[in-house]
Image 1 (cartoon, rainbow, N blue to C red):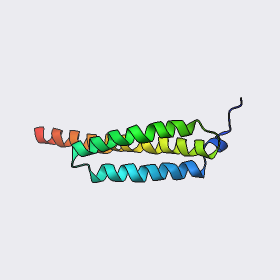
Image 2: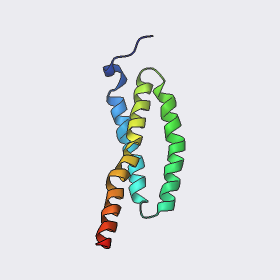
Image 3: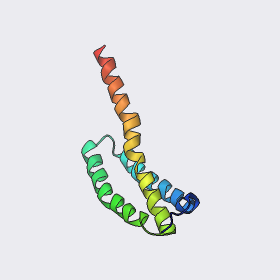
Length: 99
């Protein structure tokens, strides 16, 4: 079994899948951000649906594998966005209130 070249593994279909995943999950996350319980529930349900589907698709050959890898890459955007924007903002706000 030979390893496919990077050009075969990542392409426009994977990019489109990543963009679609980011658009759907990020939009829902930011729309429900003030309602933490609903946000956590949605994120849990989305994780249960999207991640196993993307992991299964990633193992398939050709275009389906591209889409699966794109979905996994796009799904990382939500936790990384929260980690890079919301958490530092809350920490700085809390520190400024203590000063």
